[in-house]
Image (tube, rainbow, N blue to C red; front, top):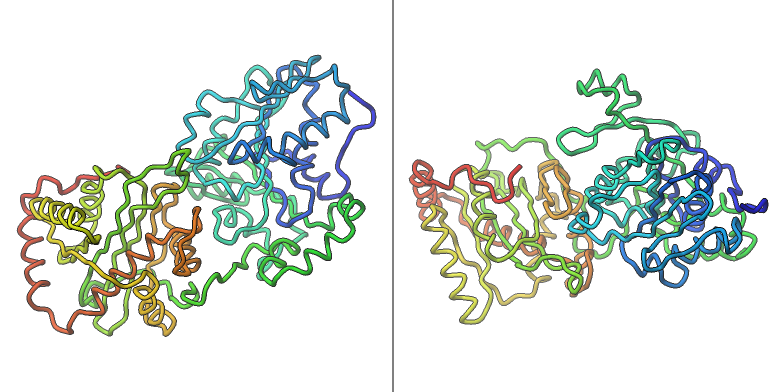
Length: 501
């Protein structure tokens, strides 16, 4: 190895390299040298026999494209070693260091379903670049691969770098390190906290003793975590190479400047004027005696994630209650990606969790074939004890959503805390994904995960149905209660779950 080694060039970068936590999260602003120091960190281990490292991003182009991680690795390793001391094996996607036999892989992790491609993987150090592009399931699965018995000299650990994202699960990890306004509290950088898993989710404490006493977990199951904030000011190389970069960041609009220059984790873009999560009030309980009428609206899709379609539509459902005082309460939100043949099981799962008397609304697309398919689906649900109402509209998505948004803006909408379940992305007991979709909805068709409007449609359908109801219970609601009560006694599908716990 060359004596002229690349290395950390600021206190924060040194803290990152020297971190001994099981999981280290670094960054929070643009231009802080996150990816570069992430690669440099591997030089501590490349002379250790049998060391294995993995650098991952969501897609292969992000790894091997122009300016990607492969380019950075070749530049860093080329400064530390002569050409005959290491080899990039493109076919295997790895660097091999000849003297020690150490290996560093570049491996993409496209989505949750791609975890099968990681089965059997093991490494001493996993480095996740742009961590806010990964789901919680993906990060947890990577943690399950933190092992390498053939190299006991290096404790398995995970390092993540990213920019802030107010709607990502990593925000909850860093909240104890932030000021009230969402900017990093620099005095807390490097503070060690601890976590473990319970029922598939993270639980946190300031010490292993706290976790043991509070949750009854085993001390040996607890892992250490630290967050180290960094901005462009912590990367003097950037200031030297591109002295105008800070000026460019200062020239960004307010939200992006706060995120990328100041590292603010709380601020978010208001993509449209149609909805703002601050308009709704979250509640912790719904008193059934105060409920006047309840509906559950669905929006169905039947495509799974694939290379050709990495972000297909979701199947969604929203349960909404109209209260006796005229307010609207949303107390159950679900989305998943399933095939057409699983729609019935999805409805049955919702039915199992609902109180009696709920009206189920099934969307009906235009066209004779679609109308016939909806009719057959509703007939099948009726045979299973679920009364439904078909809903069709000629209005645009935006025109349907505006009345709900208007009531929300005027304080008429309440949402039950932690009532959201995103099965596809393994997000439980969180409403963030719901708010994010409503806030980014503009009425225009967009591609990618930020362009979905399936929950918007379910919400609009549920609200329209409730808003059109009269103020007295009669007719259909009474019949619904009678039908649900009748089928509750002998329905063989009660207790059936489409996905399991």
